[in-house]
Length: 340
Ligand SMILES: [Ca+2]
Image (cartoon, rainbow, N blue to C red; front, side, top):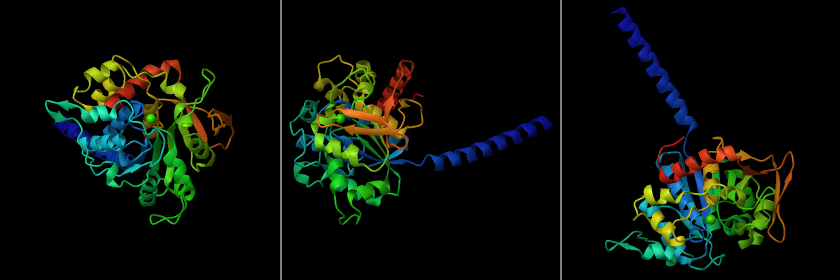
C-alpha cells in the first residue's frame, strides 16, 4: 500500500515537472514571425520551400507574416494566392515586384493553374495582376512596421529586387523610418539563397546576376546579419523524386508543378529549401556556418567573401557526413512528416 502511494506521489511530481517544463518550452518556442521573398515560377525549389513554411506554420513554429513576390509575372500572383488558399491562408498578405525581373511565364505556374483533375482545377486563385497588390517592398515595410523590434526572420530565395527597393525606400504611412532604419530595427536576421562560396566552383550565381544591381546593393547595405546559402550547398543536397511521387497525392499542386518543371524522374537541388531550414532552425546543427565576414558582389556578379571579426555575413557549409541526415530533415519538412 505504502509503495503504491509513493509511486502515485512520484507520478504527480513527474506530471508537475512535465507541465512546468512544457510551459517553459511554450514561452521559448513562440512562433517565429517570417517574411518570405520568393520568385515562385522560375525554379521549382521555391514551391518546395513554400510548402516547408506552411508545414512549420501548421506546427505552430512560425507565423508567415506575408509573401513578397519578386518574379514579375502575373501567373506567379495567381499561383501563390491559390497555394496559400489551399493551405487555409487566403488572407496571406502578398506583394509584387512591378516592372521587376523574369517577366516570362516560366515552366510550371500557368501549367498547374490550367490543370484539371476530374474536371476540377487544382488551384483556385482569387487574386490576379488586377488585384492591386502592393509593391513587394511596400508590403515588407508594412509588415515590419507592425512587428516587434528585432523579431522578424526574412527568408529571401530569389532575385533581390524587393529587398533593394526596400533599402531605398523613404518613410511612409506605415513608418517614418527609411528602409534601412526599419530593417535594422525589426529584422532579426536574413537567411538568403544567393551567391557561391568555397573553391569547388567559380561562376556568378543566378539569383545574384538576374538582378545584379539589387544584389550588390543588398549585400553592401543590408543592416542586419545575413546568412547566405550558396549555390554549392543546395547542389550537394538533391531532393529525391521518390518523395514527390510517394509522399504527395498526384493531384497536389506541388507534385503537378514538379512534374511540369522537368521530365521525371529528376532529383532537384534544394537551394531555396536550405535557406528556409536554416532560417527557422538555425541552431539545430543541420549545417555548419562559416566564420563571420563580408560578402561583396563584384560587377560581374561573383560573390566574394572576406573574413572579418565583426563582419555581419556568414555562409552555410556542410560536410559529407552531414548530408544524409540534413537531406532527411529537408524531406521531412517538405512533406510534413515527422523526423529528427
Ligand atoms: Ca528561387
